[in-house]
Image (cartoon, rainbow, N blue to C red; front, side, top):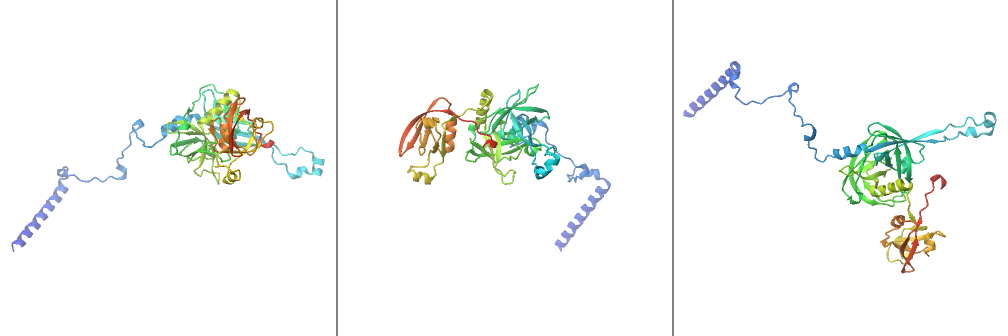
Length: 392
């Protein structure tokens, strides 16, 4: 009986409180302003929060500063070349030529190409790939700010796939800052800047995938930086930079089965590019050492056949008559082990070591013949210029 009365009192009290709250809410809602209630925001009255403008914004992992520093010095290169169109078979018919002569021959056509380049001097010198300007009879350079210039070739080096152009300008150009490619490590972040497919300046990012890539059959002298930064046709000759905005390579080639980027690109280290550029600007061409031999890799089968202890070195497969190597007594079958006390790992490294020697000066080579090592003093010659494709 007592519990029944308590429950009845509780129920009446709750009912009275609810009725009182309803009356106040209806008649005097301002009395309830102290009560914290949730606010529903509709789309028309939504309050948005904006990030601080300018330098106050933190962008962890952004490479915008590096790209902004280097981008003005990367230019677009457009080339054209006059080519003869295929002659229609009918024009070779003697009867047709008897009546109409040769005035109906096919008109010449122009072949267009595109690439990128890097401004290395404020007075208009530009570094790019040789294959970008190869055989071109007209070269136009467009800067990132829209200016266009006619360019001329100062010099080129097909064996390293590099060329130096110059444009005439009455104002100073933005210049790239050279970095140190020798300090690169696999895993370092890099950016590729260029003009892929002619769409305009583009920046892509990736890492250094490998260093010292060679034996690719791209150039005679190969020591590529491999990167997975997206590189596509039109990027050739453009800049590969580090996260400081410093030039560390010249984008040169891609590995692709479709013509587009597949995550493997190759760049010429800036150390090699600078050496070639300096020689072109100083001498108009690149001078390399030469001894006049043909070499080949030492495979395990060859090592066993020649009774060699290992596959280190380069096998002399042929010696040009009257060459520096011939004059020094080097013969086919000899194995070149060291050049000026620097070890020869393989045929590719031997080529680079010989090329680095100054023509006209002697150098000591260490070789193995019939199981015995011997030294030969060779007066280094000048490496002949490569023949053009059409002359080969």
